[in-house]
Length: 106
Image: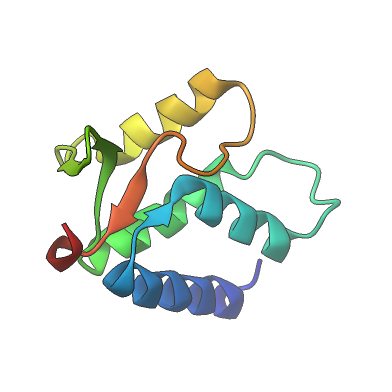
C-alpha cells in the first residue's frame, strides 16, 4: 500500500466515521483490497495504522451493546480491537469486535 493509498483510505474512512460507525470488518476489508489478494500476510499492522490515524483525527473506538455505543478508554482501545480480532481466529465480520466513530455520532 502506498502512502497515497493509505492517506486516501484514511480520508474516506474519516468521512464515513463522521456520518456513521465504521466497523473493524470494514477497515480490514479496505486494507486487504489495497494490499491486493496475494499480499501473503496478515494485515493487522496496516489495519492498526489506519485505526491510529483515524483516532488522531478525532475518532473514538468502542462497541455497541444493549442498544448503545460504548467508548473504550483511549489508552487501550486499539489494543482491545486487535486482541478481539485475534481472539476471533479469523477476519472479523459485520458487527464483530468493535467500531470507530466521531463522538458526535455517539
